[in-house]
Length: 403
Image (cartoon, rainbow, N blue to C red; front, side):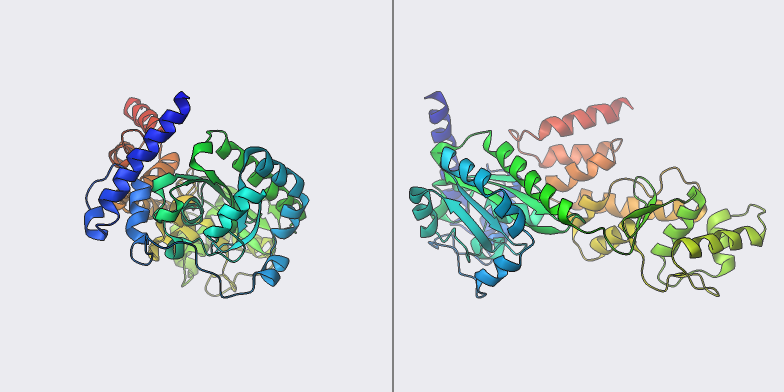
């Protein structure tokens, strides 16, 4: 009974916030509100394209049948059908799987919940991305690539205020976002264990996806937080110096002359020209001859995590940048060219995070920058007073101040 009263009070408080801010539009939401920051920010974005008074999700213009038949998620979801049905039936949920665009491809629920879901087009073909259906757990999970719960009037669309939704992203073996798994029910059935169930089922789907996935083709260089080269899914043994050279080549569009690369690697140290030539010969064999001779550059671009972060920053996609930034560039290297790029990346990431109004960016980046007091303070400044993530930010700030 006490739990039900708590849920009722929470719902009533959210309804008051929604009534105060959402009908007033974008100008009002520019000011502070009592909802979670990520919800308020999603409301602000959503109001540009979504009417809060709409009664259901719009329908996809594409036939969903062939799309689901060709989806890589169909096999794993079909194999786990009995578990998903059991979860939905036992707890009174509707389960849904979307593609990466937020269009629902598959759902399951008991007769009562299925009818309720169909009234708002929470069904195959329904478009639940932020631009079409506003703030909801599916749209937030797709946008941030992490799990989300959206309760009652946290939904932008009033027709969804009777719902609570739990959602988590589903990723392919190479990290590509394929869609989301969502469990939704009426707000009175809200339960803290529901998110754990979603995470467990998502992990089971991903495990089946990854087991069936072929080894990734081509080369992939990892140099943020650590250093390794993979070729067709197999690790290539390289010395630290060779990883440094590959990283420099990956980050340079124009390539390097022998003299310029020599200085970037050795600085002013007295090292013979033959030393670098020997390293390049080894690297050509390791990469299948993909490095040119007169000017050192790759004949085809090398897939590299640091380069992905740079491109994300340049395009303004900070969600992707913080997700991929796992630490400083080759942190143990003292090579001049690497230290220069390391500082460049760190400064670019830090400034972007400190300028962002989204606490998720500061929290995610804070994992890779444990000693950065300003970043942890920024996260605490952005997080609402009752947000449970404040505990993580507070602990990180305390550790950084003691360091």
